[in-house]
Amino acid sequence: MGIWVALFFAIISISMKKSIALNKECAEEKSKIMGLISDYFTNIMSVKLFATQSFEQDRFFKLKNFFINVAEKGGTYHTWLYGGLSLLTSGYALLFVSALIFGYQNGIVSPGDFALVIMINFNIINTIFQLSYTLRNFIANWGEVDQALALLEEGEPTHLDQPKATALKCHSGEITFYRVAFQYKGTEMLFQNKSLTIKSGQKVGLVGYSGGGKSTFVNLILRLYDVTHGAILIDDQDIRDVTQDSLRKNISMIPQNPMLFHRSVMENIRYGRIEATDKEVIEAAKKAHAHEFIKKLPQVYDSLAGERGIKLSGGQCQRIAIARAILKNAPILILDEATSQLDSVTESLIQESLWTLMKNKTTIVIAHRLSTLLHMDRILVFDKGKVVEDGTHSELLKKTGLYKNLWCAQVGSLSDESSKNNP
Ligand SMILES: Nc1ncnc2c1ncn2[C@@H]1O[C@H](COP(=O)(O)OP(=O)(O)OP(=O)(O)O)[C@@H](O)[C@H]1O
Ligand SMILES: [Mg+2]
Image (cartoon, rainbow, N blue to C red; front, side, top):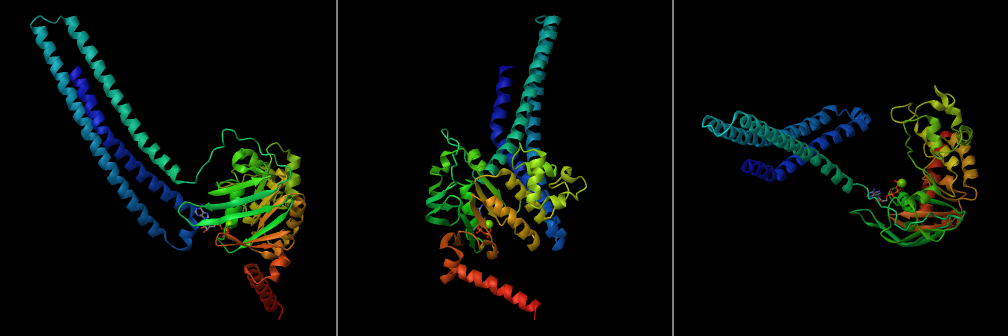
């Protein structure tokens, strides 16, 4: 019995490494297929527009064949392994049953002993086999978990609050960049030791070419990433020393492409301040000029939004995001192209509410349409990850720099448009 158990576990432990590797390979191929399927459905519009259905199908079949090969390899290996173990066990069972028959025939083993030994042995064999199957399932799951963990490690960096992190005390909302430099994994360094202060209540516009670093600048303030060098301070507190919850509670962010939950419109707006009453939510929606379209929805504020709910336009989602920010009413406000998807009439209506919202708040506005930044206290101009100009609209126009070029290009194209329309 001892020899059989030792042999059984020796084979299992020797085969374990290979078994884990095969299961991991299988999980990797499976996740590639799942990734392709999810990518396909996310980009279904592009597939249709570029008529690439058969191209996508070929990719799918290639991956499917890889998966089948790997699964077959694993299946064959495990069939041989468990076939071998079953053979070993059958040999052992044959041996001890023969020994028992021999003992019984020679009067060494009584019928009672015979039955007892058979029962004990088969119970032990059964338990050990169950154990090995549990181990096999564990190894299979291990492969999938290991693969998922590897994906997480490759993804966005996550950072925890420091053990002694305290809540941010935001008295005035002054933001200071002190010798900040930041680098995404494998890319060039951005901001190169930049120091600047955005005073309490100041309204700052961020402009510049696409990829200049504007979104990264605000993402660093939100501590979605940690600076590589230097520090960012809010009211003289290093944002790494405060809890992330308290930091983000003090900042309202209206993103370019706000995402909505598959929940009611009411709940989606209330996300700005969970404890807000229905009345407050509706008030905020009115200020964001969202109430007009919400009241026309089939179930008004109870209509389900999000991926599987009613399809709202980009501008409608932006108005819901603005309503959320109005409800949140945090001392620091960040708008990343927050009104870019609105028509000019709705935009000018909302602008009024936004100005009220900005009152007494430190505000950062990212905008490609420079005319929306005319009334900002200050404009920062970004180019290739650096702040290349800093001043008011009129100060920057006096220089012959990037801002003036951008402004002239936009004003020029606008006047061209109007002269075309009014010959
Ligand atoms: N998650 C990321 N990982 C790696 N590089 C990134 C990431 N996000 C942005 N970058 C890079 O950092 C640089 C700055 O990007 P950022 O998104 O801040 O530009 P932006 O000024 O906001 O551009 P846009 O006007 O198009 O929104 C770009 O070169 C971009 O490719
Ligand atoms: Mg951006």
